[in-house]
Image 1 (spheres, rainbow, N blue to C red):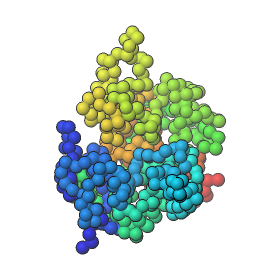
Image 2 (cartoon, rainbow, N blue to C red):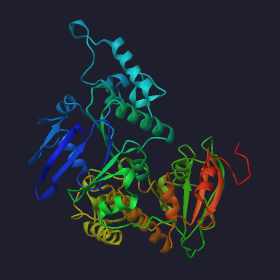
Image 3 (tube, helix red, strand yellow):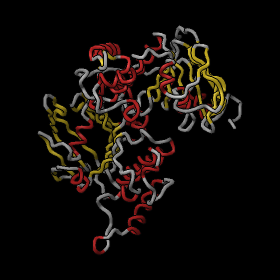
Image 4 (cartoon, rainbow, N blue to C red):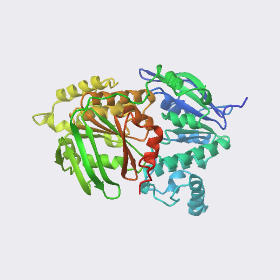
Length: 504
């Protein structure tokens, strides 16, 4: 039997009033990719913080190889060969790529001087393995989010790692960058490094992992061999029930046209886009990164000025110069980056939900607490937001409940059009199902809904029609009855229709 590279035994961690981990055991073998899965709030992050020395367990022990270890901070964990690739970036944007990768461990010459030549050479050797388009001297702040994520990954390649923990590593990567990431993971596997892979994306889990361990409500629920299980079996272990992940074949009762776009263009970002969305309809926008989907949404929300074309709401042309214009005319946007753009994490749930309309909730010179609480209570019940109360900080909620707060914020404005960009990014499978159900319910209540997603199962599951985009062009629009996975893939690759050529 191969000895584990890393093992956690009967870990218990309690916080005031909460037993976050209840006797959890977990191991990863050398050269194994081992998925750790569970709903938001299941205990995955707490377990990893125990492993990284951020939290100390109340009971249980950690073994690296066969050696019991106690780690009181992340530097001790790294010294023991345990390396974290965090979902939330922790980079110093003003420093170079090299300085970030070797922060706190810069190579030195005599008299404590930094050996810049050695630093840059070592960094460029690592970056070559990652096949990135920047070098050691590049300032991190000038990089895209995806490339900043690659800098985080590069940190793992600087030490003699026993185990590397990847936490939602592909959340901001393009398809091409994912391929490179998976090659890096394969190289680490071949070097005998144990990989712990945390992700909500089932297709990734089944593509690259050997085993899957599941947590639920702070307890270990079991370990499955990836090649011998199914998505449904994993889901049942995670949430205790099966999910309906079938395609949408509902025939919604559609109302009048809420939004019509005619010949809309925005420089080189997208060109000559025309479509409409009716009340009671969900229209999904699907395409590769850079296809122009998010840029169209930003134009509709007044964040970008179109270079040509018309936008009509309820048959009347509108000119949107700012988000305030869009909100006033009944357009709301749930952004892709809910933490950075959709929420104020240090504020409570009530204040986040009422933020866009706080000026309308005044009693004299003061904001009416009663009116704010009434709005929060209404949408907490309507959207089944799970929180102890309105005073809870949004930053302490699970990803699914944070997304519901953002959606509730805009629903309270009674929009004509609700745009949802990547509605379930970073959300567990159970909460994902709830968000999908909510989108369908909103349509049934007469909302016009535009959904932008990079996940094919998602657009197939929630959409009445699907708009396929390629390099800023609308290639084809499908109904839910006629679309197939093959035809959708062809369309987002630039093939306009069967027998047709690629888009120019």
